[in-house]
Length: 366
Ligand SMILES: Cc1ncc(COP(=O)(O)O)c(C=O)c1O
Image (tube, rainbow, N blue to C red; front, side, top):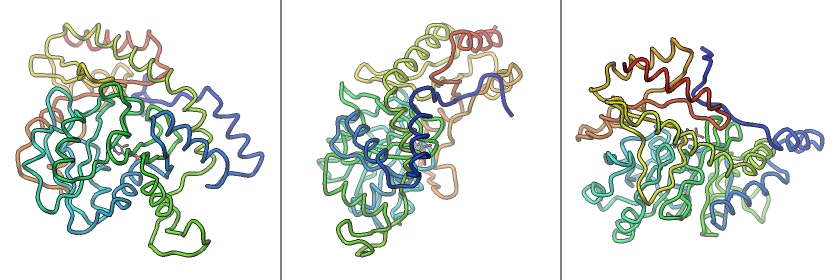
């Protein structure tokens, strides 16, 4: 159903049409073409990292990263219980096992204190997920990884431009993986990117995403690869989006500030996390609706819908679902899943729209 105020929508008002038109007029619409390389270079620059390897979406970005690091059958990879299923699915594609840890109440990200207990001789990597645009506590995670010789793949699907202690996410671990799905901070429709400072890893990912074909010997395959390429059309949109990314991020931060200002005094509402060391880029502005709020989270979603305002429940903890089932307790992930709601967050939102949403939440809380 199309509601008056959607939960998300892309802003495509820069050079998107111009660059896509160029692809069509020149015939470069497939995965060869100048926009792919440009987009990779400029996105890596934006993240302050040396190499960018584009791909078809954020899920396969994680799959490529895991394969490039040699992770496969018999290996274990530690991931947060609270994340979108793609993080776990990518691990399962390699034959490795996702090992779930609960998240922190004050960042909603993987709890570093719980990682050590999950490490076994089979553990090969950790995938911190910068959820909803707030970075994980990376120093603690990197220290554990170093002490235990584990790789770190940052899942940055929701956190383009987010910063941890002044440094951009994605370049802290071995590889950072991004999604450019239509609701992301910048979009290519569908699309993804792996970034790394390690040339060898970048080259491995390039070969893997292109059928495993030897880069210097056409049609020669030493390994089994995939077709995980992005198209020049998508990269054209991506480049145009990238030209506006700082503006998009600033706008999201302003939207969050406005929401915070008006929701902070409402009993029963927990505002989104914002650690002093973090730049939260608010991919989604999300709050928790606690028991002190006059109606339940689900009732709030219904009431907002009646007023033409879209919103979303949080994810389910992975541990609850059959492919990832784990009976060990994950109290914070469960709490978030039961109480969390994402409110509309998109670059083009007007102040009137934000105020209308705030007024609607206030109305039902009185
Ligand atoms: C945390 C997280 N990881 C991975 C992905 C996968 O990205 P994509 O949908 O582009 O495959 C998503 C997104 O949608 C996500 O939110």
